[in-house]
Image (tube, rainbow, N blue to C red):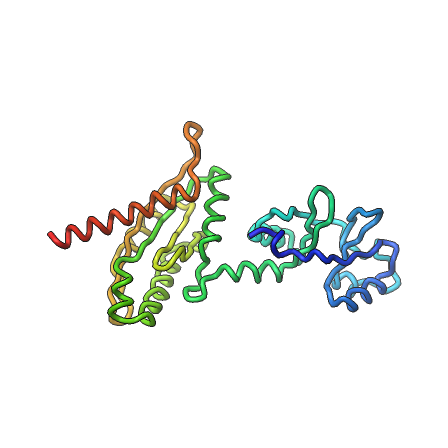
Length: 268
């Protein structure tokens, strides 16, 4: 999701020659936490409610405003926006395109949008998150390991024990994923009983994840397991980089084949 989808376009402005008191009164009137400061239709700063509280009311906006403006494109992703605000320790970003003011976005709005990407059952991120992380790593050329995890016979669990137990199994498996992964690993519930883990750590760590997640787990009376396919990406100048969809298709086909092989071995 891009900032263009969530930014506030009705931006209130003030000129730098107005008083801090006037800025505070305007913020109170519109129930907002900041004003963009403009001169000759050019953005020159931003004054926040914090600036107002810490400045004498008779001072000029020019003296109280923040001039180190962090302006970003409306095409910036909400994840990059959050990283930018955390890195600069700020609460809002001014959104501009080709020097023209398009809107403003707050940390609260960005966090709310990111939280909407959480799966309500497992509290893991959903597919847009892992798509974004993968595409960022592909663009940077950084090596990574991509694990596609497909639970075995989950439909049977739902049929034999009911969907409530099925949900408990999904929640239980999600917790196993969190315990196996490192804090910097990216995890998501991709769809239904499919999960993805992405790590930039060593091959040993990635292999340990595969081995751990391939073992049977027990949730109350249910014993369940998963098929895990692993793909290693490293930058190369001799062939075009794969897309997220390429990697997903490759690993999902691998888990499908694993399940077929397991079924044949069971019948034999």
